[in-house]
Amino acid sequence: MSDSNRSVFTNPSTFILLGVPGLEGSHVWISIPFCGLYAIALLGNLAILFIIKMEPRLHEPMYYFLCMLTVTDLVLCTSTLPKTLSIFWFNSREISFSGCFTQMFFIHSLTVMESGYCVVMAFDRYVAICDPLRHSTILTNSMMVKIGLAVALRGIILILPFPLLAIRWPYCRTNIIFSTHCKYMSVVSLACGDIRISSYYGLFVAFAVMFLDLFLIAVSYTQILRAIFRLPTKDARVKTFGTCSSHLLAILAFNLPALFTFLTQYFGQNMPHHVHIIVANVYLLVPPMLNPIIYGVRTKQIRDNLVQLFTPRKK
Image 1: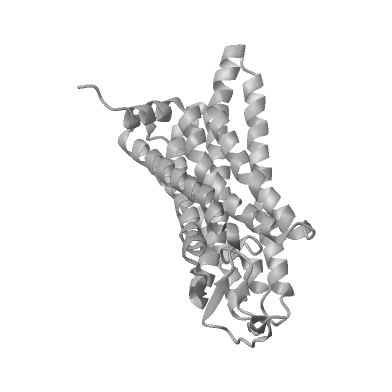
Image 2: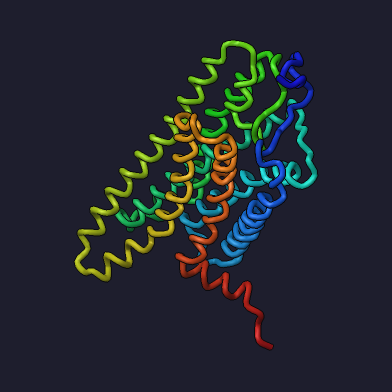
């Protein structure tokens, strides 16, 4: 056993993020796709925000909720990727004790918020298709602000116990985290005490958020599909369903990596450790990168403005 693993730490001043153990020699190569995905996520989401702000036709509930999702994506990937790239490029592995718990809080709370905004956008599509005459009266500006704040507060309240529980344990085994960022269970597993409360609460949040939100989305789209199939013509059904396609793809882009990450974390003990770490990073990068592409390609108003934004004007 190495000296670092035999050392005694009592709430160390810093943690050590190892990056991707076993693939240290490939860190620079691994950083290339990560950096590319991060750049796409930044440029794409900033472009979406700029277009929605500048185009009056997009000042509608669906696009306001898309702005909330976009801001969440930007903060989520920025809370992890700069530190990850500094590990890959400069071997800067130290992160302060408080910085680690702060990063942990941002990662998990923003993930819960993103899931919540997917539910809110499903509700918006439900009202727009099933009760279009009342859409503007139900989703007023004040109501959208209240919904957005409620989603944000849910993420904060559910995840606030994570750092509060984690910080109370004595860390006396090692300060080495086998990852590129401070995930809840990666940090808590280093503690010396009985961490069952932390483990049970982490499972509770994962199941409550993932399955409750998926259930609410499924209920919304069941009603939406029933309304679509009642439309008299095939063209009307296709056109109406097309207004939901971007949101459905965004749901898949978020939930499929989330489900895979959850299953590999709790039931993939036989998988190589570096696979767990890469999957966890992909999960934090793929939705922020895909969402602007999905909405840019599938939404005509955004697509047209994107073309104008990146096409030089003729003199």
